[in-house]
Amino acid sequence: MQEKLPSDFFNWLVDLRRWFHRFPETGYKEKKTSAKICEVLNTFDVPYQSGVGGTGVLARLRAKRPGPVLAFRADMDGLPLNEANDVSYKSQHHGLMHACGHDGHMTIALGVIKWLIESDWQKQGAGEILFIFQPAEEGGAGAKAMLETGIFDLEPIDAIFAGHLHPEQPVGDIGIAPEISNAAADTILIRLEGKGGHGAHPHQCKDPIVVGAHLLTQLQTVISREVSPLDSAVLTIGRFEAGSASNIIPEEAYMEGTLRTFQPEVRNQIIKRLEELVGGIAKSYEVRLVLEIISGYPVLVNDFKLVRHTKRCASEVLGADHVHTDLPRMGAEDFAFFCQKWPGVMVGLGCHDLDKGFRYGLHSCHFDFDERVLDVGTRLFARILTRYIENRVTLHDN
Image (cartoon, rainbow, N blue to C red):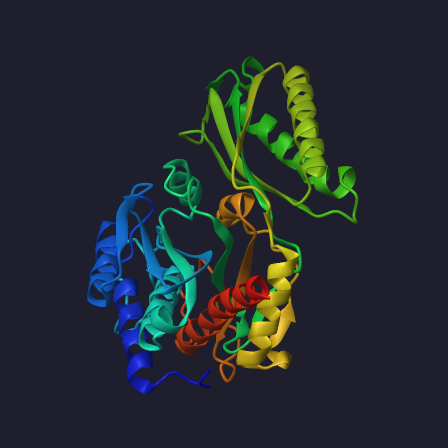
């Protein structure tokens, strides 16, 4: 494979990425994004099905010879965030931004399709590759929605691959977790029901703010004193709302947070302890507390055989010294739903300019990336996908 894509190919990638970046859309509202993807697929004369799981697109590239079926996933949604970057391709949708690299993910997927077509893979290669353009990764479980349509039920998919921009690493480097890649995520909702009244007469009230503050303090001990230091977990309360005026004790207060875990037994242990804490504090303060746990994304586990294959291909494309072993991340990823159905692997693509260093992480209003990662991602995943099929066909023939 070439060390770099031709300049006209790379410029096409950059222009496409910048179009996606200018028009971000949130989960299940990616109509303009989906239409653009379909427009590009039409220029390639690639068959596809749109409206899958809402706004998802499923494209199909088939080679002349029979072989295994693979899948490659790219997420499409942006975030409800005002962009702070002063760039020519700044978001034109006020209050929305591609701050998690999904504009890059879609561009790389379309780049792989373009590369396969222009390299005559359809005539010379074997097998079939499904390109999954998925909506609503940012909390909307778009992967699950696409699976629940049944569109994949009869697809004999061998393996699924995906990439995610990792701004902590420089462009040209990648990282892969050998097993657990991303944590499971649960949402914690707590409603505190007390007795409101005048702020000058607290003895006549049951103050839910005081109760909530005490509960919040107690929750900080769940991880530090209840979970083994050899295990990993995060419990964060990100929302605490109550009250309407300085001299009014409110009737209610609300807390909302997130729980991130790697092991089911640790998750169950923490949830049990939360129930006990909430029940005990409610009794102690004579108020009513309602705890709700909303299950989110499952743990994302990379398949070890695909990790080995991906690292081998990445060493060929990028050089072995640019291929790193990642630790698990506490961020959740709904690619996990696909990996529950088929063996899969998530690849972290370094994307900061080495000369400038790491500046802003994902979900920052200042996030941007070195666009050379579009070249890297296209070449890398083209090699990963085609080499996997070649190895399987050779093994079958022998």
